[in-house]
Image 1 (tube, rainbow, N blue to C red):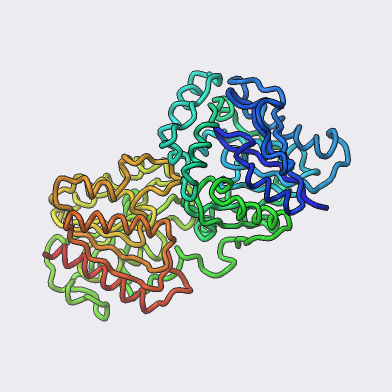
Image 2: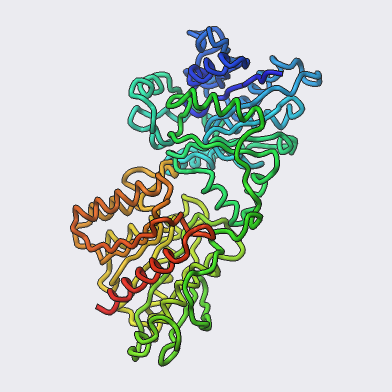
Length: 547
């Protein structure tokens, strides 16, 4: 049986966004129906040109209720599209339907699949997460500043009204436009329509039937997320992501931005056909493929030091007289009185309640113990970065932890270094913008140094280290950057941008490379490269504390 694709657009768009993809799918022998969801300014059935008639794509508009449309309206419209193919509810129909949702469109797709599960062969989420029961689509809106407007309406109990469509230069607030031509961007802007607020504020209600429908995720890597990143999130143990390791769940990557139907419609059509055939990459449950990267052993020998835990901060103090047989012990032997401290800050977002917690990860505790073995006070901080919207809260956690460290009489409060990992990199921005005199060094390991496209942060975001460095009216503290050679292109671009800004500012930056290392390391990486790089980076930080 040839598949029938029902294509559901995302926010502000209609069926026309699928034209080029629909044309390629029908050329391959598939049937296609492109749905236009209810909302003001969107074509009704029979209004205006349909998506390319030669592609047999059909806009299913239904009776649009303008701004009063909500998520339930859109779910019913997708159900109607399914019924138009398979017959009325309760009929035998067929299981050849592939429901494809882009962006917001995955919410009505999942809601409809939950009510017509016996007729749906597969759900495909195009650059969108898998929605959860009871969560409104507003939670998935990337632009954090945009979230505030509907949230204010929700607080008053109002669901009427609309969210205006983006202007031509504003689409990047909703996702990367990488690969979209100027002409396509012009057309996208011209056809954009307001989004009814009710579609964002009403929670998605699921009965559980959709959980049994095979599902495929199409990840657009230029928007910031790839398969490897999703696997790492699964490895952190978030129960909400465990379903992604099921046998019916597959993934594909496309090296493009958030609108693949505009940037690479032929590639997207090919992926949809393969998804319909059950192909794709499958994730593994946590630990099933060996030790997850964040639990891989620290690469260097460290002393067994007692941990002193205070709130969200763990201290590792050097032994008096140093630790024999540990690298750098001679440095520890030379120090009397209060010691300098290196505060290690984990990345994220990390699911709330993750076990083990970040400060117990071998990489974080190992760095702290290693620094303590060389005479500094090693400190780990656990912060509440559970979502990209949590950076302000995490920054407050780190600042409070640093105050606690500096107040300890065993710490030389005038000699502090801060070291950030991975997704903790954006927290560097505050310290670059206003570095206190006691901050002797900033370090970062395989960091994200600018907001990724799918984070929904504006260019003037507070948590943008590249911009903070470029705009600072003073010399930044010395910087140590541990860089991996096999970093994802999207994160590597933020590092390159940061180094370019550092070069323009003539900032002091020590770059330590792991040429064949991946983000976060892991069992497949060359251990000797990691040992040498970590050793060199820690020594560089301690040298700046001693200077």
